[in-house]
Amino acid sequence: MSSQPLQNGALNGVRVLEIAHLAAAVAGSVLADLGAEVIKIEPPGGEAARGLAPLAELPGGGQVSCAWLAFNTGKKSVCVDLDSPEGLEQFARLAASADIIVSDFERLPISACDILAPLAEKANPQVIWTEILPFGRGGPYEDFPATDSVLQALGGHLFLNGDIDRPPVRIGLPVGVLQGGAEAAAAALMAYYHALRTGEGQRVDISIQECVVWTLLNTTMAWQILELIEMRGGAIRRERANRFYTRCVWPCRDGHIFFGPVGGGGGAAREKSYQALLAWMTAEGAGDPILTAFDWNGDGQFEISQANYDAVTEVISRFISSKTKEELMTRAVASRILLAPISSVGEILGNAQFRARGLFERCDDPQSGLSLEYPARWVRLSRTPLSPLSPPPLAGGDTRTLLAVEALHEKVD
Image (cartoon, rainbow, N blue to C red):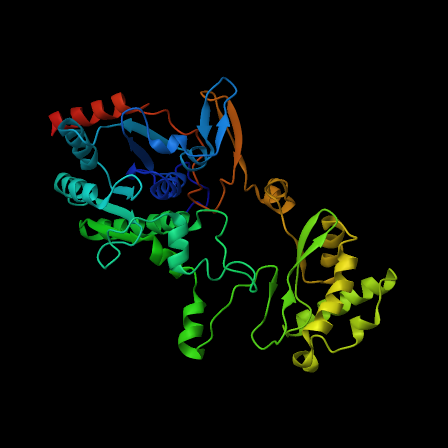
């Protein structure tokens, strides 16, 4: 058998309809990257998500949403008025040849799903109808509206994010909605696999609140088995058996770093890391009696007071703040110190590891005049590599072609 990569993606030949604002656009983006033909069904004039802030100025005039650019590469667009009888007929024709349909709550409320899903199932019993809702079907929250912040709060993300001595904070991105979209893509493919084997379509019900809870992983186990409440740990945290707060995020000359806490256990790796830091500080004349006044990471660690910990923190912080992120990273790698620079977005784009592995791929859009890099190579498939990037579609750019083809198929059938 040949081991050469194939030209087409793993989902070559799979057709996906997408009725999206953001979450389903993420699902569609994953499927498009894998080689599926993804057709966005937009309302006349285009999807409202095209205007999501922040907006970027285009070289030739006009504006475009950064989120729209991010999640809609490699797709086609058909404008259909789903509120009209004609539009419903057009939707049914498209559904007849689709394998998967993905929708989200910001584009389709439950009532609209209950109109469109039966239409799709009637036109195509094998189709996979995938709907992403804030709380899923059933239960007392079914009809509650929600934003990403609400879902992060109810799902537990807020409780676990931020500093332990301050109120919880929201993660700075709509990670609940994005996670819901990613899990919807995986679930739709599982249902599609079942359809391939049996010929049976089905409905896939995604609750974003449940997706958020899924990411908490062992925190729910720790509570049930140990009655242990996992606590947030941002810049500072108190580890499980400690009586004092330790620092994780430290300022340096040109930003911040993460440095494995001094004190509080952590095993041999943390002990070796601390000894390597001490050797560096001593060599540069930055030693201080407090640095060796206690067995910070060994057997006596639990007898250390907060005042003593704050004293050693001040000495270490003074040393770290005299270094740049590059200086700290270089020494950390050489001496096995548990330390890493906290990357800005600009630094992520220049990261040597990402560049060496080819994570980013440039996409030129002659329509908008933009040339942007995407984190496009998010998985490597030896036989069916991800699809090459193509720009997001113009609103309704494929309406005439696709609807004409479907009408022709209908006449032939």
